[in-house]
Length: 120
Length: 112
Image 1 (cartoon, chains in turn purple, green):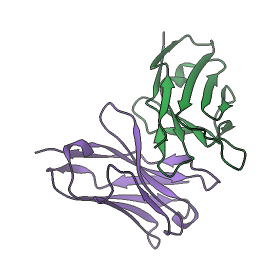
Image 2: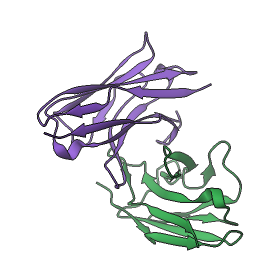
Image 3: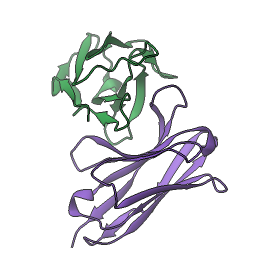
Image 4: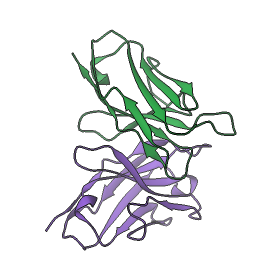
């Protein structure tokens, strides 16, 4: 069964760091683009970063560029998001999502999400 | 970035009746392949989003055929032919043409 399970969320002070993990099962990360999509409390969806199956293509939204780093470990079939210089406005549910491997982007599998709270 | 605008903000629906959601993009989403790079997602209460439609009109695996996507360039519509109680939630469109993927603000569908 194809599945994504996120972990690593928690409470962190402004300026702090956190690393989110996403364990993939039932498929190989090398065959798909993967993304991190967040949802601030009561708000909509924001795609903040994605990485290609080869790892050669990486994109960051302007809101996280220079502060967040996406990476993956093909040996453990896991996706990561390293977050530093966290701000209050980074508070959100962070979802890991799989891209469908077609000609466009479409996220066909989502994790359950992990909550990040940035507060003093 | 491409701006995605959805309407209405909230849509009260009656079970068994049709429903329609509009999504407009600030730029054409027509790709050189001939497909519109536009997706629709549904986030049911307390759940993660799920993919309904991609490439403007292709239903994702397991999505009931009462859901359909249409439109082209900058104007798109998601239609539910006969709403069921399980269809409540927030619907989002997303453009997949530009590198910076962007979502609409969402349309909340609720039962009258």
